[in-house]
Image 1 (tube, rainbow, N blue to C red):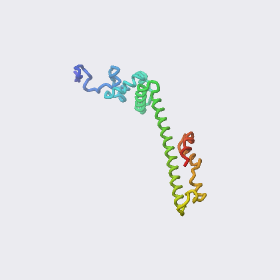
Image 2: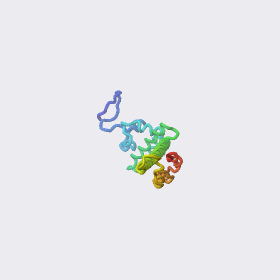
Image 3: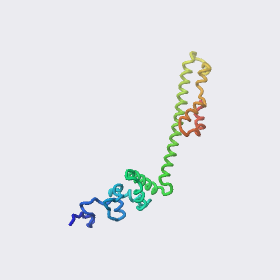
Image 4: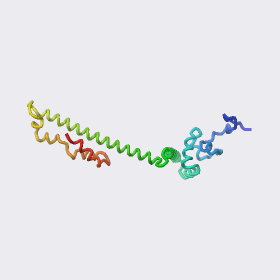
Length: 187
Protein backbone atom coordinates (compact mmCIF):
# COMPACT_ATOMS: atom_id res chain seq x y z
CA UNK A 1 0.00 0.00 0.00
CA UNK A 2 1.20 3.54 -0.78
CA UNK A 3 2.11 6.06 1.88
CA UNK A 4 -0.70 8.55 2.31
CA UNK A 5 -0.54 12.01 3.79
CA UNK A 6 -3.37 12.78 6.17
CA UNK A 7 -4.98 16.17 5.70
CA UNK A 8 -5.52 18.56 8.60
CA UNK A 9 -9.19 17.60 8.83
CA UNK A 10 -8.37 13.91 9.17
CA UNK A 11 -9.25 12.90 5.57
CA UNK A 12 -6.94 11.69 2.85
CA UNK A 13 -5.29 14.44 0.83
CA UNK A 14 -2.94 12.96 -1.78
CA UNK A 15 -0.26 10.30 -2.06
CA UNK A 16 3.01 11.33 -0.40
CA UNK A 17 5.04 10.72 -3.55
CA UNK A 18 3.06 13.16 -5.71
CA UNK A 19 2.97 16.93 -5.67
CA UNK A 20 -0.07 18.78 -4.37
CA UNK A 21 -2.72 19.61 -6.96
CA UNK A 22 -2.47 22.97 -8.70
CA UNK A 23 -4.81 25.78 -7.68
CA UNK A 24 -6.95 25.19 -10.77
CA UNK A 25 -7.52 21.50 -10.12
CA UNK A 26 -8.10 22.19 -6.45
CA UNK A 27 -10.78 24.81 -7.22
CA UNK A 28 -12.36 22.67 -9.92
CA UNK A 29 -12.22 19.66 -7.54
CA UNK A 30 -10.56 17.34 -9.97
CA UNK A 31 -7.46 15.20 -9.97
CA UNK A 32 -4.35 17.07 -11.14
CA UNK A 33 -2.83 14.98 -13.92
CA UNK A 34 0.88 14.94 -14.70
CA UNK A 35 0.42 16.99 -17.87
CA UNK A 36 -2.01 19.53 -16.39
CA UNK A 37 -1.83 22.70 -18.48
CA UNK A 38 -2.66 24.88 -15.46
CA UNK A 39 -0.09 23.46 -13.01
CA UNK A 40 2.98 25.48 -14.12
CA UNK A 41 1.10 28.79 -13.92
CA UNK A 42 -1.28 28.33 -10.99
CA UNK A 43 0.58 26.77 -8.04
CA UNK A 44 -1.43 25.56 -5.08
CA UNK A 45 0.12 28.33 -2.96
CA UNK A 46 -1.69 31.03 -4.99
CA UNK A 47 -5.34 29.94 -5.34
CA UNK A 48 -6.62 33.52 -5.69
CA UNK A 49 -4.87 33.90 -9.09
CA UNK A 50 -6.82 31.07 -10.70
CA UNK A 51 -10.03 31.96 -8.87
CA UNK A 52 -10.15 35.43 -10.42
CA UNK A 53 -9.26 34.19 -13.92
CA UNK A 54 -11.81 31.39 -13.63
CA UNK A 55 -14.53 33.79 -12.48
CA UNK A 56 -13.96 36.21 -15.38
CA UNK A 57 -12.93 33.96 -18.28
CA UNK A 58 -13.88 30.42 -17.26
CA UNK A 59 -11.65 27.37 -17.02
CA UNK A 60 -12.65 26.00 -20.42
CA UNK A 61 -11.84 29.25 -22.22
CA UNK A 62 -8.55 29.54 -20.34
CA UNK A 63 -7.65 25.97 -21.30
CA UNK A 64 -8.40 26.67 -24.98
CA UNK A 65 -6.39 29.87 -24.90
CA UNK A 66 -3.37 28.24 -23.28
CA UNK A 67 -3.46 25.43 -25.85
CA UNK A 68 -3.30 28.01 -28.68
CA UNK A 69 -0.43 30.04 -27.19
CA UNK A 70 3.12 28.72 -27.76
CA UNK A 71 4.62 27.21 -24.60
CA UNK A 72 7.31 29.90 -24.30
CA UNK A 73 4.66 32.66 -24.19
CA UNK A 74 2.17 31.02 -21.84
CA UNK A 75 3.65 32.55 -18.69
CA UNK A 76 3.21 36.05 -20.11
CA UNK A 77 -0.30 35.20 -21.30
CA UNK A 78 -1.29 33.96 -17.84
CA UNK A 79 0.18 37.06 -16.17
CA UNK A 80 -1.80 39.24 -18.54
CA UNK A 81 -5.01 37.29 -17.96
CA UNK A 82 -4.58 37.50 -14.19
CA UNK A 83 -4.08 41.28 -14.45
CA UNK A 84 -7.10 41.65 -16.75
CA UNK A 85 -9.27 39.47 -14.51
CA UNK A 86 -8.33 41.44 -11.40
CA UNK A 87 -8.97 44.73 -13.21
CA UNK A 88 -12.34 43.45 -14.46
CA UNK A 89 -13.32 42.44 -10.92
CA UNK A 90 -12.39 45.90 -9.58
CA UNK A 91 -14.08 47.72 -12.48
CA UNK A 92 -16.68 45.49 -14.18
CA UNK A 93 -17.46 48.06 -16.89
CA UNK A 94 -14.07 49.25 -18.11
CA UNK A 95 -11.67 46.67 -16.67
CA UNK A 96 -8.03 47.26 -17.53
CA UNK A 97 -8.98 49.83 -20.20
CA UNK A 98 -10.18 52.10 -17.40
CA UNK A 99 -6.85 51.76 -15.61
CA UNK A 100 -4.91 52.44 -18.82
CA UNK A 101 -7.05 55.50 -19.61
CA UNK A 102 -6.53 56.83 -16.11
CA UNK A 103 -2.76 56.42 -16.43
CA UNK A 104 -2.78 58.14 -19.84
CA UNK A 105 -4.66 61.13 -18.38
CA UNK A 106 -2.16 61.24 -15.54
CA UNK A 107 0.78 61.24 -18.01
CA UNK A 108 -0.82 64.07 -20.03
CA UNK A 109 -1.36 66.10 -16.87
CA UNK A 110 2.24 65.58 -15.77
CA UNK A 111 3.50 66.54 -19.25
CA UNK A 112 1.49 69.75 -19.02
CA UNK A 113 2.89 70.51 -15.57
CA UNK A 114 6.42 69.83 -16.82
CA UNK A 115 5.98 72.12 -19.83
CA UNK A 116 4.59 74.89 -17.61
CA UNK A 117 7.49 74.51 -15.19
CA UNK A 118 9.97 74.66 -18.07
CA UNK A 119 8.29 77.79 -19.40
CA UNK A 120 8.45 79.38 -15.95
CA UNK A 121 12.15 78.49 -15.67
CA UNK A 122 12.87 80.14 -19.02
CA UNK A 123 10.89 83.22 -17.98
CA UNK A 124 12.82 83.47 -14.71
CA UNK A 125 16.17 82.96 -16.45
CA UNK A 126 15.30 85.69 -18.92
CA UNK A 127 14.27 87.98 -16.07
CA UNK A 128 17.54 87.32 -14.24
CA UNK A 129 19.59 87.88 -17.39
CA UNK A 130 17.71 91.11 -18.11
CA UNK A 131 18.21 92.34 -14.54
CA UNK A 132 21.93 91.56 -14.74
CA UNK A 133 22.20 93.51 -18.00
CA UNK A 134 20.33 96.44 -16.51
CA UNK A 135 22.57 96.52 -13.45
CA UNK A 136 25.70 96.14 -15.52
CA UNK A 137 24.60 98.74 -18.08
CA UNK A 138 23.69 101.61 -15.71
CA UNK A 139 26.76 103.45 -14.46
CA UNK A 140 24.80 106.40 -13.07
CA UNK A 141 22.84 106.08 -9.88
CA UNK A 142 19.80 108.05 -11.06
CA UNK A 143 17.10 107.44 -13.57
CA UNK A 144 15.13 104.36 -14.37
CA UNK A 145 16.98 101.23 -15.48
CA UNK A 146 15.04 101.12 -18.73
CA UNK A 147 16.15 104.63 -19.68
CA UNK A 148 19.83 103.67 -19.35
CA UNK A 149 19.48 100.46 -21.43
CA UNK A 150 20.57 100.33 -25.00
CA UNK A 151 17.87 99.35 -27.53
CA UNK A 152 19.60 95.96 -28.05
CA UNK A 153 19.46 95.13 -24.32
CA UNK A 154 15.85 96.30 -24.07
CA UNK A 155 14.90 94.15 -27.08
CA UNK A 156 16.71 91.12 -25.58
CA UNK A 157 14.84 91.50 -22.28
CA UNK A 158 11.42 91.09 -23.86
CA UNK A 159 10.20 87.51 -24.27
CA UNK A 160 8.87 86.63 -27.69
CA UNK A 161 6.15 84.33 -28.90
CA UNK A 162 8.88 82.30 -30.66
CA UNK A 163 10.38 81.38 -27.30
CA UNK A 164 6.98 80.30 -25.98
CA UNK A 165 6.40 78.24 -29.12
CA UNK A 166 9.82 76.62 -28.67
CA UNK A 167 8.86 75.42 -25.19
CA UNK A 168 5.51 74.13 -26.44
CA UNK A 169 7.13 72.23 -29.32
CA UNK A 170 9.57 70.64 -26.88
CA UNK A 171 6.71 68.66 -25.38
CA UNK A 172 4.93 66.28 -27.79
CA UNK A 173 1.20 66.90 -28.30
CA UNK A 174 1.25 70.11 -26.29
CA UNK A 175 0.39 72.67 -28.99
CA UNK A 176 -3.00 73.31 -27.41
CA UNK A 177 -1.18 74.59 -24.33
CA UNK A 178 0.25 77.59 -26.20
CA UNK A 179 -2.56 79.81 -24.92
CA UNK A 180 -1.82 78.71 -21.37
CA UNK A 181 1.81 79.75 -21.78
CA UNK A 182 0.93 83.24 -22.92
CA UNK A 183 0.09 84.26 -19.35
CA UNK A 184 3.66 83.42 -18.27
CA UNK A 185 5.24 85.75 -20.81
CA UNK A 186 4.21 89.10 -19.36
CA UNK A 187 6.60 90.94 -17.06
